[in-house]
Amino acid sequence: MKKLILSTALSAMMALSPALAETPVHGGNMIVTYKDDVATLDPAIGYDWQNWSMIKSVFDGLMDYEPGTTTLRPGLAESYEISEDGLSYTFKLRPGVKFHNGREMTAEDVVWSINRVVNPATQSPGQGFFAMIEGFDASSVDGSPLTGVSAPDAGTVVFKLSRPDATFLHVMALNFSYVVPKEAVEAAGADFGKQPVGTGAFKLAEWTLGQRLVFEKNADYWIPGVPYLDSFTVEVGQEPVVALLRAQNGEVDVPGDGIPPAKFTEVMGDPAQAANVVEGGQLHTGYITMNVTAAPFDKVEVRRAVNMAINKDRIIQVINGRAVPANQPLPPSMPGYTKDYAGYPYDVEGAKALLAEAGLADGFETEIYVMNTDPNPRIAQAIQQDLKAIGITANIRSLAQANVIEAGGAGQAPMIWSGGMAWIADFPDPSNFYGPILGCGGAVEGGWNWSKYCNAELDALAAKADSTVDPAKAEERLKLWSDTYMGVMEDAPWAPVFNEQRYTMKSPRMGGADALYVDPVSIPVNYDYVYIKE
Image: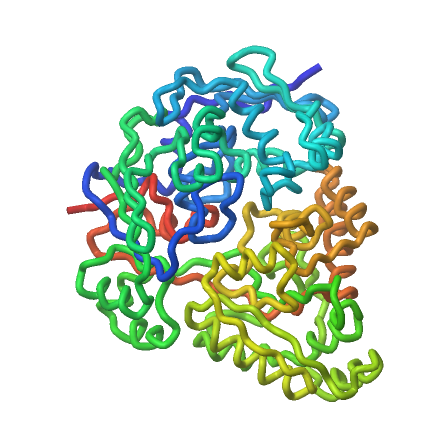
């Protein structure tokens, strides 16, 4: 027996969205800047905050979020049903949705896209998100099709789960679940990330490496009237300070890398500039990873010593106080955060004692990888000084974001400062801070678990938490998550450093609710729903 969960007309959903309260204007081109080039627009591969929202504009998934919020709504699915035991999900697709190449999307495209992400040959950092689907264990190893995904007809997709999972609908809204056309992927091969074809509100019209990406409106988009912009241009190779100056001169609409820390006080102190700043909380934690599979970080005493060596208050000063100290992987605003946990104290002598206990009283030499956009190199220098105080010589490797991510995924980086790539929740649930970045499923080639940390007991506890789907047991589920993260802190594969607030600048000509510019799931801006007022 199945229970109908949702079948909602799109127009009704749109009318309810708080981010669409004012009357939008159609037309125009928005300009966004970044220091680094974009790594990829392949939804199975892209997993950094820079390309995340661009991918959202080119592709769609079965589920989505109301603009500017964390409220789930159907996407390519018109409706869905969940079985009473929580093990079967049936999605009815919207009819007439077309890919950018003009072909109509079918249920087989959904099945193929999900199988592609799970196939180890794809090397998707999102593979672990799909572990609840029946047949995942085999598919994730040998690339065989998932037994738990099928298309009984062209308009229906059925998922069978091996266990109930409270996060499954959120997973169906993730970029990794986005639907791609098999023929376009096979034709482009490894270049699909630079020749993307989706069903989204925008099509990629131009990509000049090292210069710009131009996205043009998809006139056949399945949501009536969306997007509002005719196009948006992403200019790359722009130093953040230069981008800010251009924004002040009216040449740039959104400096994608944010307000440079060195200019933050100046901008906020000028009422005219401060009026163009949008502030929003974010489900974010900045942390230092330590590769637990390689000496000396294979010793828990060393990892705990690093936690005790970090002067978090001093590091927060580097970013003008735009954060609070972190003491665990979860940020304070996330359900499951352990409020009565103090974390590791800042204790230089205690840290030295732990190194001595590990047989490293004389310290050691290592490397810390860092993204090369300010303030991250300066934060890495502060971390370097803190580690020096306990006898650890950490040589800094300052690289472009994509290179740091690649080194982390390959297990080549002993330590990484996550800034500029730090974890911002894909969806507002404590499980999201575990699977991809701390769970065994993320500790794979190309994965985002850069510590390569894998604790089978904690994985089992996490699975139990996510199998608790009964709303009446919500508190019990959060307690399981709290216990999981306390176990992580005991093993100390990370040194959590701070939880950051988000500040975005937009030009006066840009319209749309502020929430669209600090959209919790489309960072740094929800391109589909913003517009130009003039």
